Length: 349
Ligand code: CP3
Image 1 (spheres, rainbow, N blue to C red):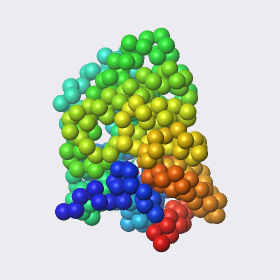
Image 2 (image 1 turned 60 degrees about the horizontal axis):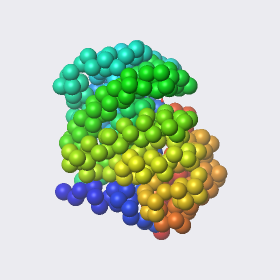
Image 3 (image 1 turned 45 degrees about the vertical axis):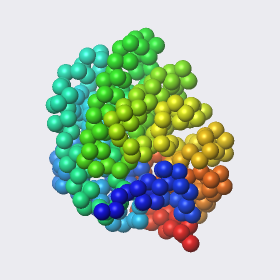
Image 4 (image 1 turned 90 degrees about the vertical axis):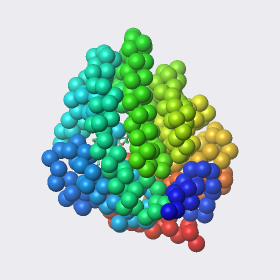
């Protein structure tokens, strides 16, 4: 059976430059697809959906039937580990995730590691079923949230906030926050090892709330826990590419790349190609970074910006996995994805 190493996606993450960049889109499975919305009605809640391998497998495969994406991403959520740790996670319609706000680190140590692994085992079942269903050698991305982003949800009890509670912890009780980050990192390491054992070909660490942190905090909230995960995965023999996505890292991007040891870095919508090219090591692979709103608007501006992104990195001999700068939103017309994909395929010629 051919391994994923020969796929365009994995070759690019390992440093190869090709005429056409491989492409997949964050949240490529989800509500912008009518077939996902239909499938979603078959489970009571979003968590049940994630824990039902037959549904998660189908959700992962749906976008691949429509578009020539170069990779699949496991259908799950970065917050599942908080559910497995009994943090009272609920997904309220129209409101996003809600949890019991964390008061102290010890509340994260109530469920044994064995029990957490057991509760997350349906995800591993989804990964192994997907590896059987996908074409041999077609890459499957496993993922988790980075400890800081997961900690923001755990401490705030929701997302989309100004993060003042967890940031205040960093100033007023740093030891407590360090323990929180450490526990989340340890659980995440085991979770990602299990995804690899089940067959994932690459890993992505989503640090969606890495934005707007002072550099001194960024060092220990974002870089250190990410480095711990990368180091421990490598020490345990995991050798697949690891993509870090420190959304909103801005000028801290090169420091993140230098210190965390990730294989490639996901760029957010606000990153600047000329800055990226001058600040990152020669040949260091990047992933990104079309504005999701440009995709929603569609048309010529989307194709022009797509060319701009691809050409900027090609001119610098920098491997690029084409993607968005953040996830697809539910309002994106599926035809726009089709138009984008058709355009990128022309680079094959
Ligand atoms: O196609 C894919 O990318 C696969 C699956 C995936 C989901 N969430 C499914 C999902 C992935 C990789 C994620 C990551 C995720 N989840 C992140 C990091 C990326 C980012 O967007 O910054 C974050 C922050 C979350 C947390 C989360 N999950 C939120 C804030 C929400 C509610 C808001 C929203 O976008 O709906 C979710 C729910 C969620 N996760 C949905 C999906 C398809 C929608 C819920 C539904 O279908 O009922």
